[in-house]
Image (spheres, rainbow, N blue to C red):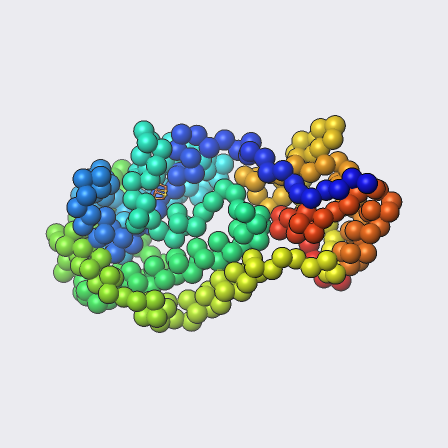
Amino acid sequence: MQVLSGVKRCPTDVYFGDMKCCTYQPRLHNFLVGRILADANSSGKPARDIVEDMIVRRSGVSPMGVYGPSTYWLLYDAVPNSFGRSSTLRCPLFDLAAGSCRVWPYREATCATWFCKYNRGKKGMTFWESLRDLLGALERALARTLVLELDPGTESLEVLFSRSGEPFEVEELVGGASDSSHARRWGKWGGREREFFQECAHRAEAVGLEEVLLMGGVEARALALLVRERFQMLQEQGQTDVPLTLGRFEIIRSMDDHAQLSTYSNYDPIEVPRALLAGLVRFDGRPANTVIEEIERCDGVMISAELLRTLCDFGVLVESRF
Ligand code: SF4
């Protein structure tokens, strides 16, 4: 009897160049920009200089924060395979020489929750994605509330809170916003952008979790429920009496004894013994323990509880709905 207790995690074939996964323009909300500007440490100077430069160039800058130029997002959305590869899309705050983030303590929701591999595979990814969505919603709510509090004026609010967003300007194709667009965005705070961002950071310091959840409204409450539920799912160790069937996966490499599978993500392939692969087709919606006994009897392979949990975590086996 061959006893199988786990799968092997493999390095990804997807090439992340020198800039790792930082081919992304972070959404530096106003209070985060304020924190970066107020960081008096000498190690924070390069980041301060970069953000200052973006403010001076009006490159994707508004009272909501520094979100990067519109042209960046056009390219980002248009070329999906560029992730981790294109230096054109490299984050301006990534330190290429050190291979690290210059604003680590102030990074936003996506940067704080993205990983190329998750301990619990797809289950882990689902949890972290729900946390990203919650943190993102809270960050946006806080940034918007701070804009309201600091009242840049009606015309500015009209632009910043418009459902369709500001029209794309020809000036932004070659640099920053035009004088008129910049003046509309900033209203009373025009020319005092740094002061505005630092005041946002100062006010954000005093905001507690309950308060920011209130700012986030119904959306934040719903997302917080999802985070709680998905965290709960991470605590579950898996049951052997649930009906399981085969999930979606691709065999990306086949060797004599093993096969490499791409399951929930191309970044996190796993290697499984061929003997297991042959037995997996027996999962047809019957309770897992029935099928495991059948595999032991017919294929001479024993699947441990730990292996079963990993196969479920990676979506190789999924709960049958029928
Ligand atoms: S802010 Fe930091 S973590 Fe986020 S993309 Fe830039 S360098 Fe990477």
